[in-house]
Length: 363
Image 1 (cartoon, helix red, strand yellow):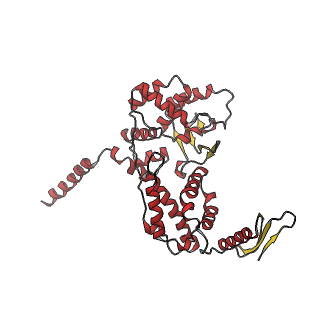
Image 2 (cartoon, helix red, strand yellow; image 1 turned 90 degrees about the horizontal axis):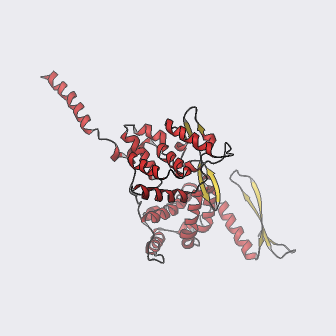
């Protein structure tokens, strides 16, 4: 047994030998265990994980899962997953052996999630329940795909909850004009909302903008990053998707406005953020401006919907709009189908012309 006692301080340590994924013989030392039993348990779990032996506990496999996927995800995405795993999944399944968890155990866990009520007697939302279940299923899928687990019991049990499609709201150009007039007293608010409405960019994309992103000679702004506030720190990440990396052509009036705004910012460097405001500030300004303008209150993200609906109304195609806003064209077609003008009558008339021509030739 490769477990030894450090006579100098009374703690225990492990010298574990193993073969890595390249077939190379390696040795790992782990120190600082208070008891021999703790050291032996760590060594046993380490060997199980290294051998990908699914006789291990769910908690032990989750450590493997975390090591495999964490570095592939954005920090904000991982923090959400980590919270769900640590508070909703591990407390229930942690001590069970992953290979022995079946649909019966999954359904019992689902029932606990469905029965939960907070101190105001409110249950988890259907959207949240679906998200939690999807995370559990993702861990089992990882075990099936990479560690030879026979099947995914979470998939067999079926999901709980459902996706909550929030109502899509947007402002007309007239509504936005009324709103923007009311927030002109705060330049940072006015110019921020101008970028959101006339370019259709996301909130995080707006807050990550720097002077270096603007090319006024070409009339463009480059979207290549996103801002997040995580654990009290400002974090700049890549945009939401690969498609989100894009260069947007700005209308001439917006170019002039942004030149004007950048000129107001004293001592600004090329890589400095130009909107050092918070998301809560933007939400407060949305409340203030909408109330003063007498227009319906929409979400910040609904300004993106407003931009897209404006472009649809102007007659642009789903493909052209998708390139501008960093979406896939299929998503634009699916999400905004009800806004595109119906071509059914025009199609029928053209088909009728073709059919009549053929009929006349025959007769």
